[in-house]
Length: 127
Image 1 (cartoon, rainbow, N blue to C red):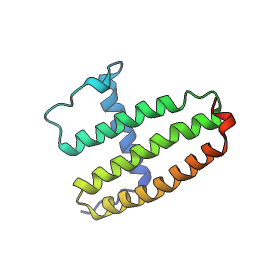
Image 2 (cartoon, helix red, strand yellow; image 1 turned 120 degrees about the horizontal axis):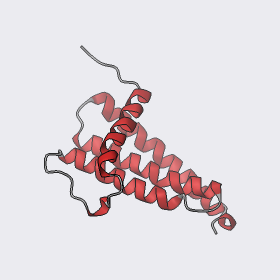
Image 3 (cartoon, rainbow, N blue to C red; image 1 turned 45 degrees about the vertical axis):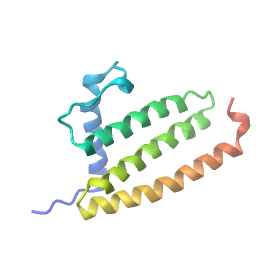
Image 4 (cartoon, rainbow, N blue to C red; image 1 turned 90 degrees about the horizontal axis):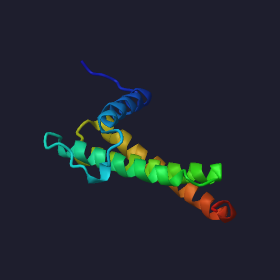
């Protein structure tokens, strides 16, 4: 039986899986942890992308200007999505998921460029 997973269902699954993966490591320094050997290489790459993304997002949102904080938090969020999509293209086999990964890369790169351009045009807000 073929299952048709919509983008929102996939997003909900990713959020749920993040919560499950993050809970046991709450309060731990993820930069100095080695993933369990039982994880597949793709899972290791997904987790590495998520770790980088969360660290950089947390740094980005520290700006006191909410607009700059939003852009500086969303840029690494989008970069994390690109890294995860690249992992899908490297290891994934399902044509629908590979197409979604390609679409994510294209859309997220365009949005990153838009946000970086906006940040450059608002230097006064970057205090």
